[in-house]
Image 1: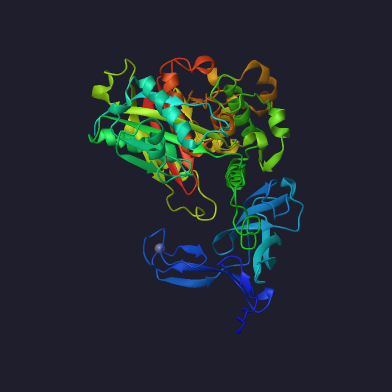
Image 2: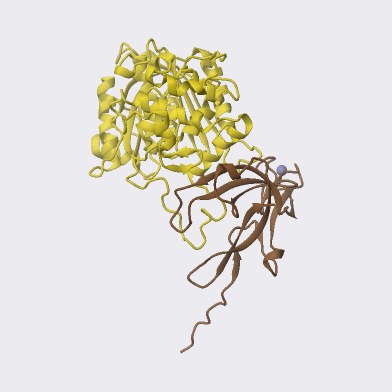
Length: 142
Length: 398
Ligand SMILES: [Zn+2]
């Protein structure tokens, strides 16, 4: 009886706007720029919500550095996440705003200043039942 | 477009009804609204039903409980603005001349799911790994944008809870009717900075209904028809960070501008407002979005006493609140905000909220609001925002 060959476990980005490189140091955030109106989006786009065109879009590499726009400290988290933790919106250098976690500091308002400089890193955060691993990005103070 | 009147309203007490389903709650609210209007079910020409969790056939299921007359039913889902969108469809049905008498009903059975709900497959969920997308996070960060821009303190946001919980003590229909002084709000369990547990609305079950009629026929049913002076719906326009952090401000400002224009009034003419205080932070943002105070003034506006019933801080809270006041501040509006106790006390059964807010204002315009009555209320504004995003504003007047 022929055994179904199990697909080899893969390393996958947790979100489509993260592009994985050969090593974690080579991972980067991707974006799209509308050629019609110049709006820069995080991740791939087919159409433009601002100018209602189908672009076309230039795929671009987004910065791995930026500044803290706003944050919140989540004390009541979903079961598989350790609370408290810092959820934030980061404005990337050169354009694009993203949702992220800020790690490497105690989650207190005193440790967080609007506009503070931050830098990105990536790491494996989860694994599914087929053994595939998922990589996410996070930010720490620069 | 014809003038449209509200001739009957109802709201059942919000809370937990584990032994009922949403259609029974909706049937109860519908029958109470018909009774309030003095209208028979056989006179209702169409039904507009708002429910978010049971979108398919919610209105039919209500009629299967209390009145299968075979009328057209439109079921509406529009995030937290579900009930108020159903109300607006009912408004248009009459304004257009298609019908003379219709009903709008909003219902929800949320149970005890809390703020988190289900987040899908733990292996691939983004929640908590790439920021947070839960309501507490969004409204925490929306508050922090105000803090970033204007230096608003956590205590200022907390005052929205102190006020609304104080108002709720006179609302027997509210899910919670418990006062909470400032230190209690500040010291309650942290949920998502700057909001503590007492700065988050509870989940629950509930229903509310309204009977609408053309103004020229309204006097058949009531001596006190309430005029719908504006009924507005907006969605989120493109703004810089909206796709990352939902922008709850711009669509509310757009809706307010259109609503004031439709009604031919300004924020200074409002007797009262029921606005979407799903979190304490949201209440302050919407003072400014609705033009109740200038940009950056929301914190000192709530501390001034202006949006409190009676337009003043209750004596027992004066000492606590004095340090947060700016004695030179002169409020430019006197609209009482969330006399019902707001979502923070009244509860927020999603599909019911938008109709319940309008019912609350109608109670005041008729002088039926008991101990929480806004004296001499003549015109009120009901505001709802749902993430994703949709915003409704209805202005109703005597
Ligand atoms: Zn474009």
